[in-house]
Image 1 (tube, one colour):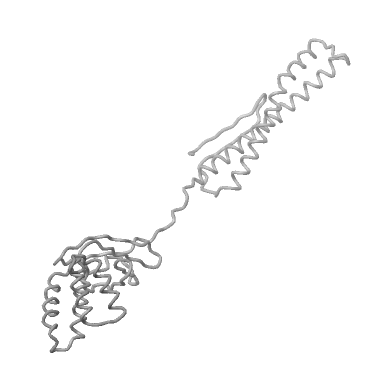
Image 2 (spheres, one colour):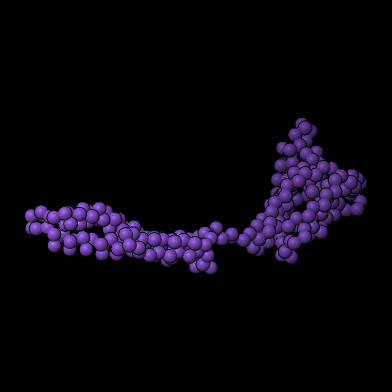
Length: 265
């Protein structure tokens, strides 16, 4: 302390007090803590010193004067529960001291942290600073309970596309049915109007040409129909039902197929 190194001296006084407690050491520790700005610690220790000294001890006036001076200088804090805070909210000051709501606390000048926790609620932390002589009131509550928001889904939209895929599949199969029926007729005409060497009259030749033009439509219908039916089945199996808002109708027509979709997606 005489060399002007109070921080180093505080550590030595504190170690000495732990090893061999004595009111004189405690009084010196209080003086040291006041020098480094730990006014609350110094106030508590000088009060503890007074409780240990005899009334006729010549150090009593010194300790009493220091206690009165520190009492006027120490910052004070009152922490209250904010509106909506659960009754079982736990308040902790500087990650160490449990705080009773409404209790006046004597704290050191500088930065501090108050944390509020409660079962089912997220932890809220408030950081603040106080100066000498300051009296601070703080209201705090844990964070509101977090509710897991469901993943955004559009069941109506998914089911709509299931119906659309099914309609397309049915339309494709309708194309298969119509074109297949026509192909059978064309094949019969070819068989009747062409010989075994594929020599045909005009009617048989036209039937063979029509059959060749219909074959891509026939096989395309199988592909579209198969994909549509499978896609529809998968969508129906993996999505939730909703109020039907879309109507889909499909049908086979001579020479092709029709698909009708009406309503809102």
